Length: 161
Image (cartoon, rainbow, N blue to C red; front, side, top):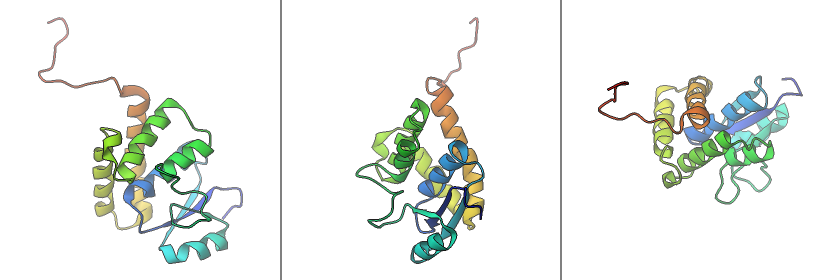
């Protein structure tokens, strides 16, 4: 693998939310060609060393990309990469709620959790799940960026009525 790529190794046992959220952030805002390796927790250190990858979202005092306090790894990446735009901060709150069993943090968090768990049941292969989940996170991001004030009510009001 090229040495100038962001390469992250990852535990297969982590929740579907973080399995997609962090790679989505990297591919969309840091390195579109980033490579992700999904391995079991016991394999992460050896695989990370072999490929010069940065482990993330696994337990360990020496893991830089991880939860910090009440914040999740997605929050850490948003902050460290300087991606602190309003839409990404809003998305980070949603991801944190879904990823840390704090669905009270954002009304959208339970929906993200449900969709993420659904994806994990639809795709056995981690990379296929990641590719399918990219569109989900694109949609959540676009909502955070462009549509937070939009509502859909019933009955629909017709223009000019």
